[in-house]
Image 1 (cartoon, helix red, strand yellow):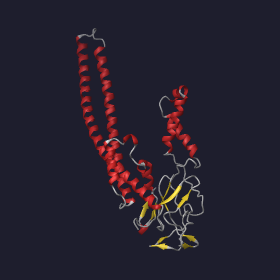
Image 2 (cartoon, one colour; image 1 turned 60 degrees about the vertical axis):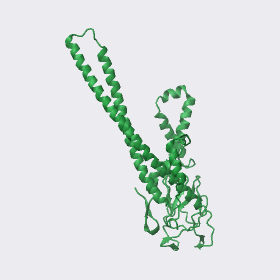
Image 3 (spheres, helix red, strand yellow; image 1 turned 135 degrees about the vertical axis):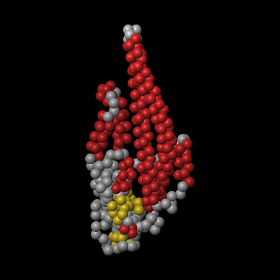
Image 4 (cartoon, one colour; image 1 turned 90 degrees about the horizontal axis):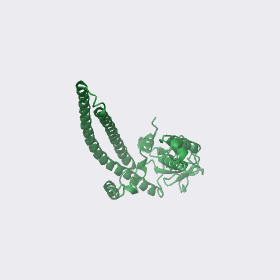
Length: 340
């Protein structure tokens, strides 16, 4: 179910889409360039674009929209390539089966055959050979399709890596500017938690009596969960209640899926321990429990200013909150139009 709140100028902000981005394409929130790939031509080209592209005049929302579109296209192209790989594997298996049948037909009972039996055997052999020729033709056709699709995926992947890199670059720029940003925060501001599943929003059930362009203005004391701060959809902090239990179950199921695990358990305890450690590392980034924020202070940090509303300083974008479970909550967008 989609969760929306209104931002500046009455614009709906869909925060569920943020969750979908983070769930399906976590790599967009980290540089796509891996150490092992830095010498490949593709990554050199991507790095060159990322190094030369200035994102200061681009809005975060416009980059996210572009990313969402290219990520979907990349996902679809990968799925199509996967289907072609599966088809190719099936034809390879069929080829092995028909070769085995041919071998058996050619070597079985050759001396004892009568003329009629030899003719029957020959017809069977011819049928198998025809089937084999058809499979080889389809394999060749499929091989060409795979090659073309691989080239297409590579082209889309380049665009995907560029846009996801630009998104990360914009996020880093926003974070650097946020630390010194005195912009006043209004209804619909986007907030982010280090361990959150998705970005969230600041809302206000009851206004303070102060407004900017018709939007309620926040103060440092506006930290009530659900009344001011919508939860972040899930929590990835290992300190959160239930996290350890959930990770234990996830690792247990992941290890079970590995072939020969019983033999591994009996003969190679150390290998099993390494597998469990690797599974924990791979799965931990995608393990989320219920988001239940408990803040360590009674108001937003670093909100001191000369502007006071109902006895509390106004909230500025540079302000932060710290959660009991280790998350740091920051204000990505003030709710006011970007650039203002």
